[in-house]
Length: 250
Image (cartoon, rainbow, N blue to C red; front, side, top):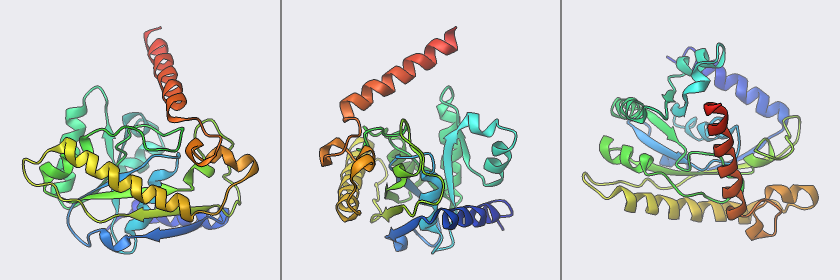
């Protein structure tokens, strides 16, 4: 029974219908019908976790996402996050978060992870952290390469929001599971994951309706868009981190 998660999904789907979002989901059968798995997802927008979770609905699975601890401290959002059994991530105590995620995987849950850690302003894949691959290896579960495209047009960093009725297409793809043997090289597995996700993402970008005018803001510079290059995006990310540290120390 999912007394919190199930109705939240129902509400979210109603919102998506009101927005006119058009979802194309590929690879739903790559999500196991039972048992644990790590869903590794690229990070384009503030709604990525809600969109990626839709891919698990066909097999009647729920995804437990790893999310910043601060969200769990919110009086309303925190209750919902705990009710949906998502996993708080305390960057000052990463070992505890890792243990919680590992326990969920061994209990047969699907855990959602963003290996880039933070949102990509360039809409290209950022360098990956190895945590997703490490969790999959240590729990003995598959690693699921999952990519989104189009989500950035709804709500992302430094760009206009389109949270009303927009009819925006959102592509979701779950690739073939990657199995990492016991004692396997997590760095090599992370690179394998990155290659798989890059291939999927480029395929989605090719199939996506052509963007023009102001919508070029949501397209990578590599494809002729006006999004920041990966280098410029990295500078903006660094500026954000520096500002956050200054505020913390002030």
